[in-house]
Length: 167
Image 1 (cartoon, rainbow, N blue to C red):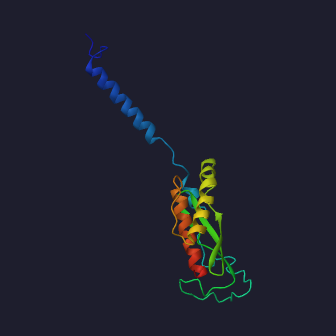
Image 2 (image 1 turned 60 degrees about the vertical axis):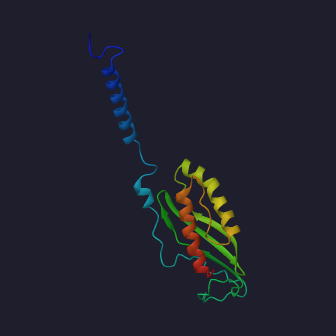
Image 3 (image 1 turned 180 degrees about the vertical axis):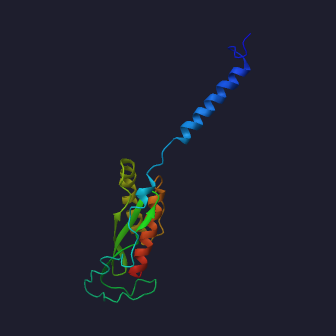
C-alpha cells in the first residue's frame, strides 16, 4: 500500500500542511492600502497654518489674545484653520467658524481621497464628524466606525483650530 492512500492520516497531514503554507503565502503577498510615498506627500504644517485667522466682522480685534477657555468674552466672527494632521491614509485638516464664542461651522478642507475606498469611507464619515463637532461644541467627539484614522486626524485638527480661536 502507498503511504498517501485515500483515507490515510498521512495524506490528511500533507494536505493540511500544503493548505496552511498556501494560505500564509497569500496572506503575506497582500499589498498595503496605500503606498508609503502618498502619506509623505502632504506638506508639513507651517507656523502660519491658520489661514484666514480672522474674518473680523465687527467686534473681533486682530490681537486674538489668549482668552481663557470660556467663550463669553469673544465677540464677532472668527474663521480659523487647524493643523494639517498626517494619518496613515493622508492628511486631515479642518476649518472652523466661531461666532460670539459659539462654534457655527466646521469644514474639512483636507482628508484622504486618493482612491475609491477612501472616498467611500469619507463620504459618510466627514459629515458625521462635522455634525458631532457642532453638537458637542468641542473636539470631544466619537470616532466614526470604519474611519478611525480620519476621525483621529479630524479631532486633532479640530482641537488645534479651537485652541487658535481661543475657545
